Amino acid sequence: MNEVNKTLYIPLFGKSLVSRKGIILKDTRAEEIWEKEHFELKGKSKSKWLAYFMAMRARVFDDWLRTLIEKSDKSTVILHIGCGMDSRAERVGTQGHQWFDGDFEDVIECRKKYYSETDCYHMIKCDLRSREWLKNIPARTDAIIVLEGISMYLTPAEIKECFSAFSEHFSSVNILMDCYTEYAAKISKYKNPINDVGVTQTYGIDDPVSVTEGNGLEFVKEHNMTPDNLINELKSTEKAIFSKVFAGSFSKKMYRIYEFKK
Image 1 (tube, helix red, strand yellow):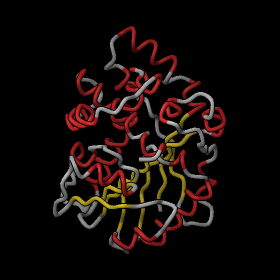
Image 2 (cartoon, helix red, strand yellow):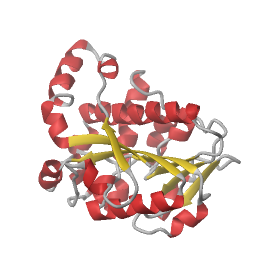
Image 3 (spheres, rainbow, N blue to C red):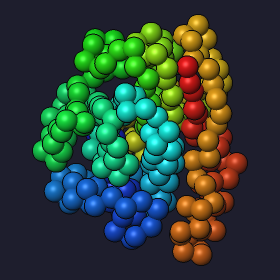
Image 4 (cartoon, rainbow, N blue to C red):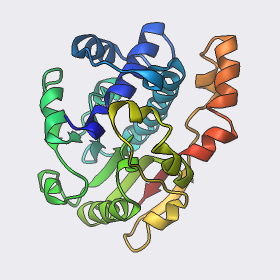
């Protein structure tokens, strides 16, 4: 597994940690996989503060996705690209929709040790820099797409092209995507937990409209990645520290979560 793919163990650890603590996110699958994989994290990548942040981010994606699925016709397909070992399909539930978890080949092969396909749930090998994998997804349908923890490894031009592919393939699209800011990408080479698994090259987006030009998508809004109701699940001292460091202006200077639609 290459360095970028190894970053999947960082959010996996975070979800397993909060799940064991009984806060933010219930994810027994993350607990199971983390226990069995025995991947060694070090430094800040195993920080409890980062774990809380990763879990809150996942919960925001879960809640957004759950709300849209409940409002959608059963013909709407769900795409979770860059799924890693995430159990979102279990946490949210397919609710009768065709759900596709996609990632690089070596990740999917590892994933198959823990997950099984069903009539509604599928695992696909994909690379967002190519359109070939979309041939395996029903076309001319509505789609809800989760791009979590993946945009920072693609250039803005690649993301823009990816959006074009989605726009052309599907009748309508709803996308939620988290991003580094350009400032965060610049300093990421020197100070980022992903450095602990060997990743130094990342990219950022300051203007979400810039990746929608000419591809039929539009920017909807920015979401709060650390909502107060989730911060309030932390113990009092931890809540005070997290609110100041991870949910304040400095955090927003580093990280954003954007919604798009066609």
